[in-house]
Length: 137
Image (tube, rainbow, N blue to C red; front, side, top):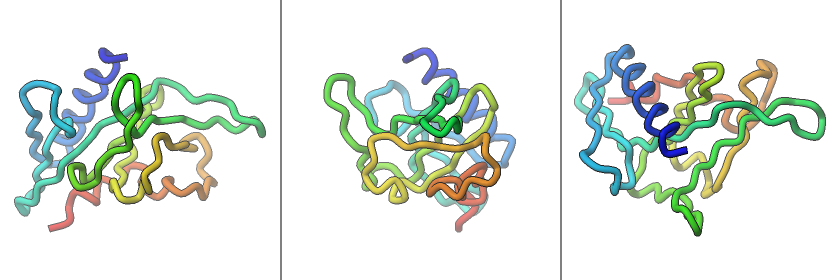
């Protein structure tokens, strides 16, 4: 799991660079963020990166990706949005990113993403590949 998380971070770093963003990962893994992202205007975003490998099939047969948006090993704690601006959810089997403002999580410890359903109106679908959120000056 830790290995997967490290891989998701590296994939995100490369994709952010492709989008013209500067990436500043911290030394060590004890901070509440996985990296700082700076846009062309010099604005810095504190980013936490999460991910999952494949969807689960729910009651109505619709595939849904479950992404844990909390941290900690024994007692899961919600992400502190005073320390994190953006939560990135990476779906590795389809190479897709959700760029979600931390406040949009509303304190949820996990979220469901319906990336395989283009008709989905679920709460976080508007953040699918929302790289423009990083362009805010």
